[in-house]
Image 1 (cartoon, one colour):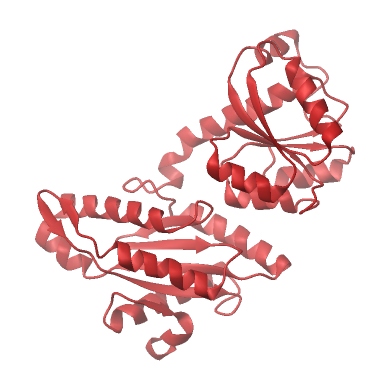
Image 2 (spheres, helix red, strand yellow):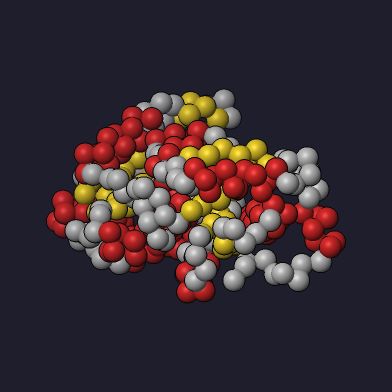
Length: 322
């Protein structure tokens, strides 16, 4: 069963062959299938797609970190992952990335599962032409572009541009669901600015809004691209760190955050140092649901602040302050 209808009109085929330069990543370990996809796309007038080919999911993730990619063509059977795991991991790391799944078999149940995991299209190798393949990629890119413009007010914090609480919980729910199956740890950091209320009273809202934007940028510098940072209101931020993650790595990352905030922030001609405190929890040790992890991270943050601030505290150490 094709994702794009056989009844596609001539007008749609003409639209699909209009030049539109796109950087597309093909994740396919079969050299013959990779050549087939390349040959199909050369059928498209002006060859508007620049194709980058890798054969493993790990290579795909590295490429996405280093190169600006507009869409991914993904085979479900790879040397380092199989089934829906590759799709799931890609969507977790890059939730806004358009992904077209390519498969050698026709299974409606797989197609339904792929859509549930966030695939934009599900195409059968050998049963499509270049125009259909390009149209699937183009529609996925345009759909995500429209969603980005429409969803910014409801999915991102208007002040910092970070994810808001709704997106935070959606991503954390996905991470927890995957971690339960894969039995690997994930970490949630709750980061709070120390004594921010006093700064707000002294400097005023406009200056403190600038400080919050700069604080968000500093946090971005300290985490991996695949990690999620959200502003959950006021002067608190949440950082989601997915596998591979270990306690030592989390502590090193938290140390980077603490260090970067020792540098003064210059705003309105004034040099200001903002200290932060960090509360940390680990799944499944410190909680088995998203809500519990967030709540326990908040308690750990309270413990860090109660202990003098400018430090990190794991939830286990926070029990004294619960």
